[in-house]
Image 1 (cartoon, rainbow, N blue to C red):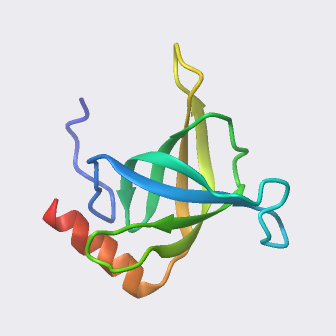
Image 2 (tube, rainbow, N blue to C red):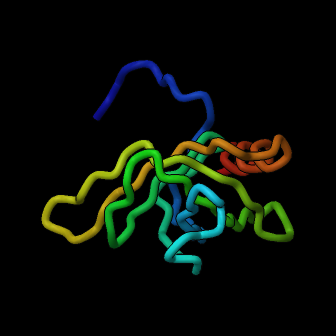
Length: 118
């Protein structure tokens, strides 16, 4: 276990969480797979998201997310960029890490506030 100083900018939500996402193309239209996938989130903060997926997603791919934050009445949207995709050992699953690149201040604040209470 890492015991050094915490360098993350935002507090993380590490309890089970569900999110929807889709892969965007350069036109932002969802490309070949325009439907939304539902994934189990392993880690969420105002800065990004980590989730398990069935397939590898190329680094730098643009993803659109819909997040259900309990403190907000309706799902919130944001866009992220894949920074890492690592296949899980002894599994067909891939861990996908994405940093949020387009997220409004209110959504970021709500995620951060929710993280502080969990």
